[in-house]
Length: 278
Image (cartoon, rainbow, N blue to C red; front, side, top):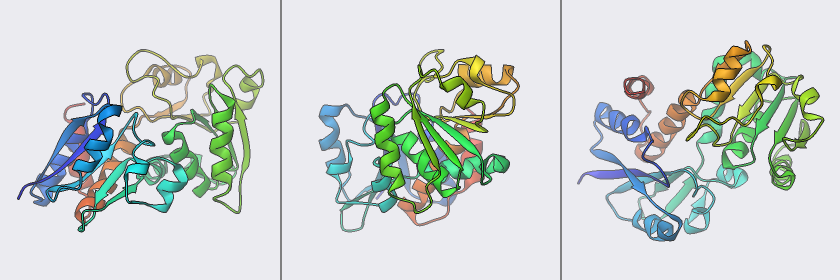
């Protein structure tokens, strides 16, 4: 029996996940195929129910369903529950479905390539208050960042994110929430060593969540979007270090692969697969 896994979201035609996972399946001798499963909100419950079939390994979940799938699952991994978002569903042997989140460890692994930005005592700004932002803040708490600033269009969502996160640690850093139009933003950002874009701006159009004038050459700009973006282009022009989301994409996929198969993922093979078509 050939097994299946896939990506649930809307839209997903841009996704590199089939190339990542199918290369890994072939290399590791796993008789499985990874597919794209476009799913709108009205179809979500039926789609998740279909994952209980015996030929399904599980699924990845992307926008806009990372939070909406949670009540449709049987169990939730503790870290995923803390983050409040699911990006990986695992079908257990008995047909039950477990929700996990591989974004936080993948983000941390990607940042380890720029380890000096993760040393204790560093200040970090996170743009957005989505599930991806929650994963980033979870990872930054683990890395013991000294200060975390969450910047979002609505202050309430940013405050809710940090309130949830503070409960998870006995050593909370200095935490701040701001909106993009706060007059204190320019001065505050000058103290940041790392700025993380956890919004979707940059996927579909030449948009940026941050004015170029707010970027300094001492920063690392990490964009979770895994394509060249205006934010990264303008950061380079300002002399900042930049990091796109490709490493995080591969790392989160590798962790999902391990959840589904119980085997270590072939990272080199997965990197080569996406770089060949990027």
